[in-house]
Image 1 (spheres, rainbow, N blue to C red):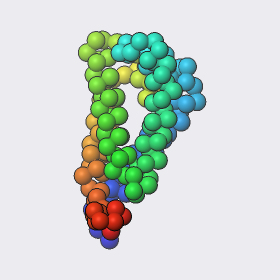
Image 2: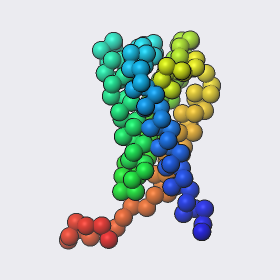
Image 3: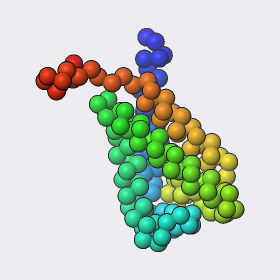
Length: 147
């Protein structure tokens, strides 16, 4: 068996585990996560509250999509997009000199630093690698079913 055939599946499992795990940790204490989001000073208070509810569910859904072959591309694209948002937030906080918890892993998160940048870049690269490697099924326009 060829590693090129297996690596997207293994990468999807790893990425799904990360997204589902972090989503579950954030759901466990939404008030702490809302404070972590608010500390970035990128959203109004109500936006931080909304993000604390929506983002963990979105992460869990993204992870689940990565595990379902038919939804793997959508999951990878969403994971790359979320990784880009996370990367932008961390860069923004570091540039502005904010000394805040990253919020990445729920209430047990550490302060933002270069490791967060590396993790976000890793997530983006892994997601894009999966997206590029997963083959799109061929469709016949006449019957609208996968071939």
